[in-house]
Amino acid sequence: MALAVTPGCASTAARSQPSAEPPGQTDRVVKTHYRATVRGARTVDYTGVLGLRIMKFVGDEHAAGMSRLLSVGPEAPQAIAGGGMFRVAFDLPEYGGNRRYTIRPWNLRDPAKTSNGSLANVLFQFWPTSDANGPVTRYDVGQKSCSLSIEQLGLKGDLSCPAVADADGHKVALSMSWSPATD
Image (cartoon, rainbow, N blue to C red; front, side, top):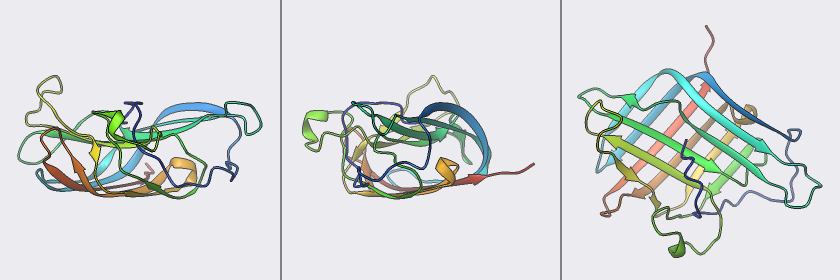
């Protein structure tokens, strides 16, 4: 998961629409069919079954200071053919159940450059080696809006981002999809 809950981007999800879930918090790892594709400054083609961490917090619809969050991403970085590892994840504070969302451009590196005041974001991390403690490149500046579809209360979905940049301005386009896997 991105879990870098710092000011970033806003979602265009309707805030007045109630969530289909009762208030509560969950943090679990779910076995999923997962696909990630990254093009541009880095290339990743990954399809497999993996543990996907899905964190949700759904606040009381009627309480003051209501809060919501859906955070989804692989439990651990995933190895890719040719060496290296990657991880694609997102945080969606405007989570309101099953529907399509738009995550507008965000900047985790310099939140002051993001004027929409949300914490929603997408993060792509790339390790050139198989050492998760080694150097990592973070693509964490959304330059164009991303499309996110949530189904089965977070257990299924797809994400598509046309332009996410790293600190040096190198860009990638990325997509991620996941659905429950059965044994």
